[in-house]
Length: 357
Ligand SMILES: [Zn+2]
Image (cartoon, rainbow, N blue to C red; front, side, top):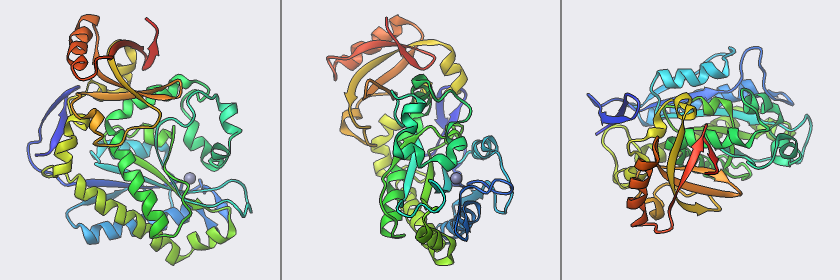
């Protein structure tokens, strides 16, 4: 049975089965050209890939509803894109871009699929920019960092908390898309990454990814991305990823793997409240686990824990359960968690950031 969010933090059965809705978001458009390579503009390449991706999804899964944030060469704001996904109760949001460092840089290449999250939490912006990966994002710099203080590590932590509900599935789709861009479209593998993309941050209803197909500043890549064949291969790759993801997470009737994960992923979430209200209060939560890499969907370590979220702190992903306004409620929850993780303890979060008690 499909689940829908009714009110702030109550899950209830959907009144009737509904279609899986995928929102495809070709980046840039109109006056916003995006990155420009030799004979290829980002806005044109990504529109071509997006339309072909939608066509393939329609062909393979006629029951899926495919929506585009733009299907012509028009400008759409970042907020408008995210809002469109939210308004349409999307089940998956795929933003498509092409990367660039600077014009005529020939050596750089490779696909990267991003999910919302932490790039380098503990680094401030200047330090982060000194690193290649961030400089490589330069063309999408305004896309990445507008709307919040990028020098504040707290901003990133807050994003991750607010978005955790969809994060595991975002990573799942990102991994599938990344693999397909390498195997089907022949792109070099720069792996799944995380960054604070504004367009992803504002998509609150569903898992979301931002695909950087490859580097358009590389002439050889620009030729590929500018060609019909190149765009078709990229679309085919994303379509294959979609097919696998959709088979795991259809909207009507959960698949088996879905049901197994539902305890960790779909339990009633106080984090599913609008970001503003989550940030406004001081809350208590129970920390039970840390890991130096993000845990994957269905990780057995999260199996019996309800209402899981995570934050990044001192180079570790820290996993917490529950969110309570009083210490007393948190203590009650702690007693339960301690049966599984005896070392668990309560932490206090304010504005989405851990504070010392
Ligand atoms: Zn872009």
